Length: 160
Image (cartoon, rainbow, N blue to C red):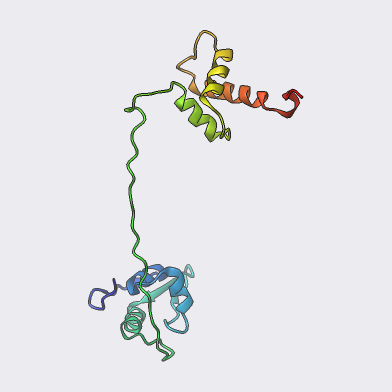
C-alpha cells in the first residue's frame, strides 16, 4: 500500500490526508502524533491543523525508515484495505407478486409490527374495506390497518 516513491507532497494537507499518505488509519495516526510523527501546524484564521511540505516529508521519512522523530523504532501495520461490495437486490416491481399484501406487510413491519402475518392483514383489510382496498391512498390504508391491528392487541381488549 505504502511506497515512498508513490507519495508526492502537496503544499498543505489535512491530518486525514497525511494519515492516508503514510498508509495508516486516522485514529492510529493521531495516537502517534507527538512521539512518532511531528505535531501539525495550525492555521491562525480557522485553527485547523495541517501539514506543510516540510512536515509531510518528515512524516514520509518516518514511515520509510520505521524510526520516529523521538528516535525510537516503530513497527507499522498497514491499514486494512476498504472493500465495498454492492449487493444487487431484485426490483420489487419486476417480480411477480405472490401476495397482494407484501407492500402493506413491509410497511407494518417498518412501523414496529414485526410479527404481523398475511392472515392478520387479510382479515384487517376485509373488515376495514369490504368493497376492496383503494389503490390511490396506500398511506391511508397502511395507517388504518396499523391502527386496527394495534387496537386488537391492546391489553384491555384481551379476553381472559
